[in-house]
Image 1 (cartoon, one colour):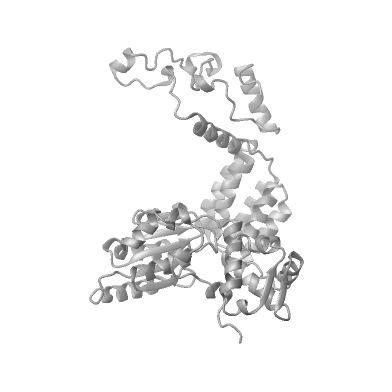
Image 2 (cartoon, one colour):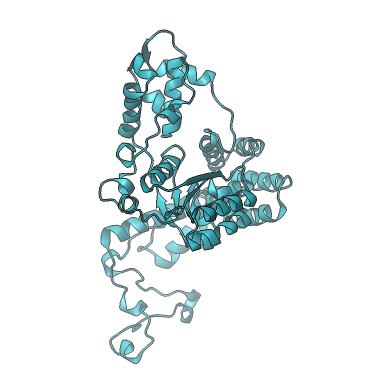
Length: 426
């Protein structure tokens, strides 16, 4: 007998007790679990990478709180679909004390008007919205809707949790438990699934089904061979989405415009959202180029704005221009590293006092007790510079920004060295 549903669907948990991962949210005593058990479920956005249980958690919330469950995919649904479900939810108010749950997968793909259509029903409590997204909701969900929802971040599953799912499937699935399956090596299973539980279980089933007999050994070689024979092409909702964007970013960071524009073409042909691509380029312009070429972030920002105005298919030309420019540009991650080092220092040293000369003194009392006293106004001095301590005394002389070796930042380094001499000698 051949199973009618994939392994990942057959193994989908139905309660919080057999839900794997996200203990910070649904473990004993965790905030979301307590709300669910009390039946006080707010509208929410579940944010996390693919295959870590967003859809499953929404189903469990519905079942645990005994609420009707409606589901839409933002990929193929529109305002009309939303309104129809809201109308159904209103009709059920006469028969049930529990307002229905509307689950929207890939909610970041809803347009502004589609998201606007949810506002009234969410605010009135006609529905409880649960949106799932792999993208930062701050960018992709309109502020009016975001303000009415709690945002919960789901963490990637670790090795033990993923292998726990494999062992559970082998021991409990009605089809797999009839076979004698031994996992001799797990590296390829974990590597090819990339932390995606759904992909992991379906890959496990694929490998088992491609071997004869009931006595089966799973090795890295077998997994790799079978997976390569069945690999899927890129599409914006497929399993290679994050591999492609990773290759895209790393190619530009590595100063290879040919590879950069190739991976851009792969995303375009796969139907990727142009705003998603443009936003990644804007981040890269600062993280990987920075002050080595300050024009890069101007170019990337103009690209982002133009993509929003122009649309397809002409946007592909604008994206290609930006990609080839950024890839050909000199690189520096000095600004990215500077903020990382500074944040690490803040966490290590705590909230150090602001030096008195740098403090604001809006009142007479503050001036009398020394706020702003001895502050030197840089523009009153030659070259608009004067030696003065701007860091807390405890970390005086600490370096966070270290210019890298490129023409632009070499000029910055020379200027800082000339101004600060030994203190910022680099």
